[in-house]
Every structure is written in structure tokens, then in C-alpha cells.
Length: 101
Ligand SMILES: [Zn+2]
Image (cartoon, rainbow, N blue to C red; front, side, top):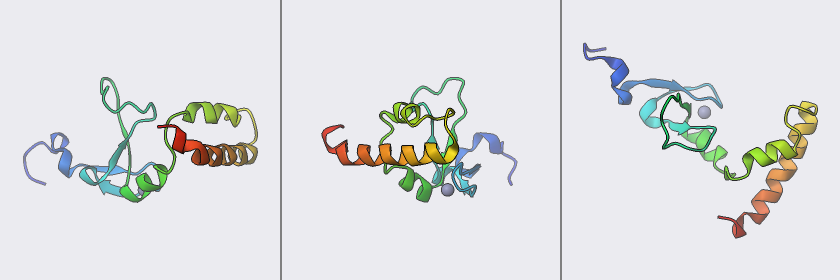
């Protein structure tokens, strides 16, 4: 570590991938903002995904994510039920995505 302030040197900072827990250089990570708004940076701390996880995550668009979580019963049904429902909804989204964005 040199004597410049490491906190202000983004390229050397390490971040933790929220999906797999790997530590990666921030410059190699992808910012993940659960609100889907990476441009409004006020009062925010971003979470990070490593590139492999980001690629997996990207299979589904973020559009409608909250609706899908809601429809799948997030927080109101048992976890296994929720996951099955969510998976079905995600499948539908994948199939119909062509007419979306
Ligand atoms: Zn990861």
C-alpha cells in the first residue's frame, strides 16, 4: 500500500460480490443497484457483483422485477413456494421478452 489515500483510489479497492462472496477488484466488479438506477448516486452505497455472477444475473431484465417478486408472494409464502413461483414467472418473462424492450 502506498501513502496515497487508498479509499479514494477506486481502481485498487476490493469489493465483495453479493452473489458468491468472492472478493474482486472494484474495477473488475459490476455495480449492482437494487433500484436499477445507477445514475442517481446520492446517499447510496452500491453493492457489487463479480463478472461471472453479473452475466448470470443479466439473463433477466430488471424491468418488472418488483412486480414478479410481488406476484410470486415474496415475504408472504414459504421460501420453496416463492422460489418455484418466481422461477415460473421468470420463465414467462424470458419467453415474452422479445416484445418488450
Ligand atoms: Zn460472484
